[in-house]
Image (cartoon, rainbow, N blue to C red; front, side, top):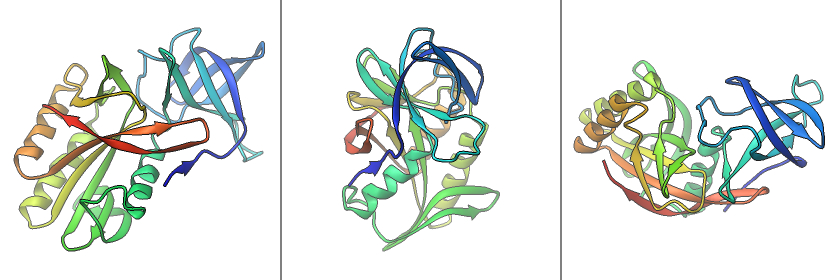
Length: 228
């Protein structure tokens, strides 16, 4: 019931982020350019002097030898690899950790003009989007931490799917273990928050979960409250 983090782990000190995809990290006195597997801003976490955990790539031909996988924030470990959120959700579905939904799982399906993360063929045919949340204030996790036109477009598609008779759901995976609530990040993208509330009001299921986190594995821990 966990997603394993493969590869050797290395402790580093964050220096700066010259672009969305790369960061400079001090590893034992050596400056290393590393991959950042998250396009969010993460400015509340990634500032000079922050301790981070890197994972060494298993691909010898890759441009960067390491990926920035975890950040320490107030002694809490936060995973920033947004690509793992779908794996964590699917693992929870397959192992029965999530009980409100079941059926045959299809990933990356096309619906109208968008690619949706999951299509679940069970008692009800359900289109489902997963969002990875790494932003936190006062034990409240939020999404997004950068404006997302793509996110709003996907919500529109889910509202449409619901009206056309499909099941529709949005699941927020908070990659930290200490948060208690989720709310849309209106300060960053007010339109996204309003769109998420519209989806909820139109019968789209919206759920949020926090995770158990270690440098070796991640799994859904429990559902958390949502407010709009």
